[in-house]
Each structure stands twice: as C-alpha cells, then as structure tokens.
Image (cartoon, rainbow, N blue to C red; front, side, top):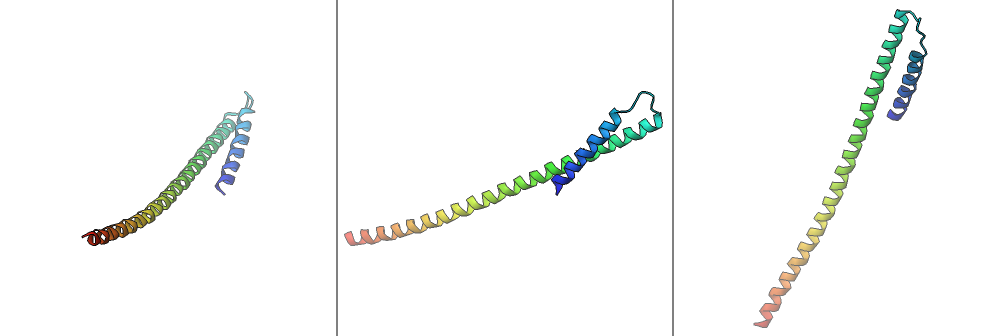
Length: 102
C-alpha cells in the first residue's frame, strides 16, 4: 500500500516538474508562482512519503531482528536446560560410582 502511494507521488512530482520546466520566459508571474508552489508542495509530499517508507522499512527490520534474537535465545535456553540435566545426571552417577568404590 505504501509503495503504491510512493509511486503515485513520484509520478505526480514528475508531471509537475515537467510542467514547471516547460514554462516559457514570457509566462505571467502569477502562473509561474502558482506552478512553483505546486512543485514545492509535490516535492514536500514526495519527501514525506519517502521518509514514511524508510521508517516502515526500519520498523520491519527491527521486528525481524527482534524475532531472530528471540528464536536464538529460546534455542540457547533449551540447550542449556538439556546440558544442565545431563550434568546433574553425570554428577549423580559419579556420586554412585564413588560410593561403590569405598
């Protein structure tokens, strides 16, 4: 959706820029001023849309990073639990073997 808005703003900015560049030297100042204002408004809208797109992409990247870290954290947690159980099991058997040797 945002990409479509960005594309529309680029097209309208390009059309307004063409209109501005096609002005002749003898064009009335009020028309020139109106088209300049329109061009400035189009540039401003374009820059705002671009900023919004970058912000959205940044949020998506941050979410992906967070989800990846959560997955790695959960995996490490499960590995540590397994290692802890194995270690406790080994310690238990070590105590049993030591008591048998006596």
